[in-house]
Image (spheres, rainbow, N blue to C red):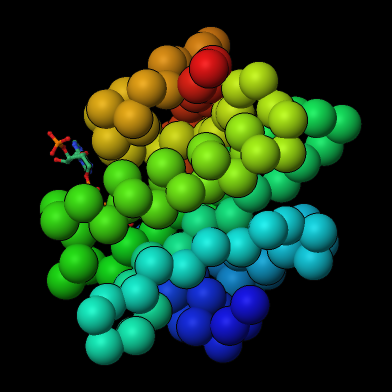
Length: 132
Ligand code: COA
């Protein structure tokens, strides 16, 4: 995995754009996670996501697309790649903690909200799950 590229995207999107504290952005899960990178036709990294598998449970996280590339299907393609990987691991569903502003994006990809809003890194979130 191209670690400098995924660190660059997450730094720009989560730490700089969304003001997530650096200490919260990087966690122990990164070492165990399967990481994904979307690239433009020139090979530059433009989006990232990660998949954590815990006891057969698939947890998708850290979905980020660089601002100039949003609204062009990059996030959707990235998310589908992560879901395919979760399916390949034998999971029957996947969950994620969505920032409330991103809920419509995940709903379009077949995820449904579960439960109530909670705060994480100062940002409101909702848990969402997709079954297949
Ligand atoms: N609100 C409503 N709809 C949205 C949306 C939003 N915030 N973001 C995307 N969509 C819709 C698109 O219009 C598109 O709809 P369509 O199926 O009708 O064409 C669909 O979702 C797929 O969008 P896509 O272009 O693939 O998404 P993207 O590349 O812009 O990536 C994010 C979406 C959320 C990953 C991106 O906006 C991002 O990185 N945001 C900042 C970081 C972030 O909030 N990450 C989520 C953490 S939970």
